[in-house]
Image (cartoon, rainbow, N blue to C red):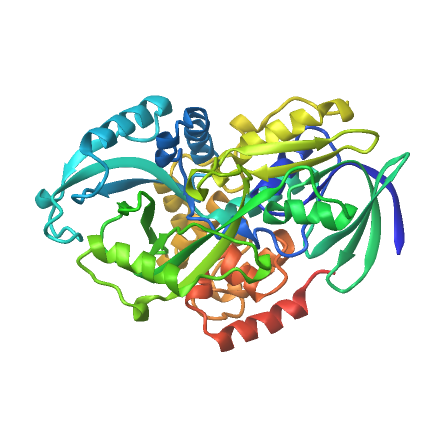
Length: 497
């Protein structure tokens, strides 16, 4: 084991959206920062969300006005910061006889619009589906409402925050597990183990436990004592099916049990349906959708859509476990999606992050750094509110598309569109010094070339085919198993050690 003589100001455990957001904010506040993640960035809950940046319309039913207001403000901030991966999208709410009363929805949507005061998102309105050409809904559904929120590539949002942190000087170490924390007069002595079994030690003035659903279990593992605050684990599952309708809008479907699910256009050719909510107490790495959850989502979709689904239509599924604050006695759908920061004070401060949602990760990061500010006197003021994430900062989609079309007229339109919604303005970096398609190198199929693969290895910490296909590009839906194996072999040969 090697010992590091350098003391970092802040060491963050966990490479999900909260950990990456804290790392970016901290690095931009003049703090020496290190983030360690036992797997890939966004390899846990942060890539298994419903992929929305939203205020949380249904939280108004539970009188969480402060959380909704905060999330709606963040919705605007994040859409401006990363317009290539966060896009406004209309949500239609069709009404069935047993749905929430029209008056209740009208009032809720009016309050949602009032809390938002947005200059980016349109206001809600009543709609008549019978007036729409080729409505995808069953003919008996005539009326409903429309409101606006945003769709996000969740795993790329994590990567962009890690990139921003690295650009500000942070060290990002993926496939590196924290296996020990020991107090010392110089701060925490942190034992790390990489994927090859190699061990190192790092000293840190402050440690942040942002391990997501592992937050309480990590504390118990490292200190062999029951953590002061428990995390209530809730599994949310989704199914991916062939696209249910031609329009660009999403749908919010109301179940007679009071819950709602979303049907969202996904990756051009699919619809994403979810999420379920069920208590979870198993191995976090083995969370998977149940037969009952699949039937639940299919049944609710079939209550609304003319295109009737069967199990054979399910292209893919995924399940993520969310850590919620343990509010004893509350139904899991009513447990707050707000976050809680638990500070272990003393000579070696340790901050643990409980709960939270993708939309409010930036304010969580600000609050986390404010909580430990007195231990880090070199910290400067907050800065992320007006910051642009990597790939953002361009005038608009049309102007950027025209620029890239002129820069690389030989680039296939489908590939250009994928690069623009993945890398945004950083598509220019991929094209630096490239004068033709043949200069992108070997193709691995489906528009994935050596040039992009090497970029993802060098700049975005990709270590294997899964990192690239599922968390960097979403090409996993079209790659065959054999194509994936060939990609894995190539990545293994080009890993930067």
